[in-house]
Image (tube, rainbow, N blue to C red; front, side, top):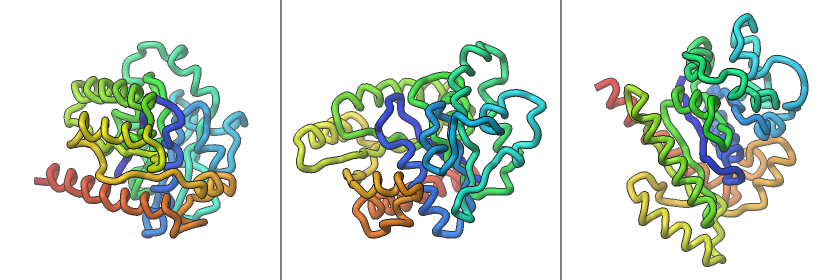
Length: 261
């Protein structure tokens, strides 16, 4: 199982849309996909038709022993090849509850290792804050996708995310391969163009060559609870994510070959 995290230290940049859309595209290629909602807000959980305020097994349960096997906590979705480990609003209390307990940064990594043969890909939707949940995601992932809204304030979140990646790479045995993905790009506005130029100047090696445009079909797909590639496969947004997936698969395969070599 390959593990991809979708993270940025700012909300509203398209993390959940990115994770769900890539999951949909992978499933349409015959891959078995596990979605992992690591955000206490539970946007991905709601997208897939579950209530993050409801009781029941969720990612929160995994942080405490005696909750049962991980496989039993995974839930079905309406798509045969996509399953989900849901979020709970209780995740917001983890930093306070766990404090600086040793080993709590590897909980998700160990849990996913337990079910590694059941899925081809796991996509982790991260919270927009640095804490135990993001640390777990970055410790577990093989590849990191950083969606960045094409506007000035989002660039500040990207700066914080770059510092976090640097910090995590000091702690990991191997650096995290990552890709910055400009999202919500509106070619009609000067602000989007200026933000994109800024990213090209500051992060030329890590920036995806294209953009994910503003597309109302993302909102419609979210309302229907389906990945946009299922509902509107020829829309601009779906086609952009198709190009993105092809790029990520190429980079991820290259990373695997380097490890094997």
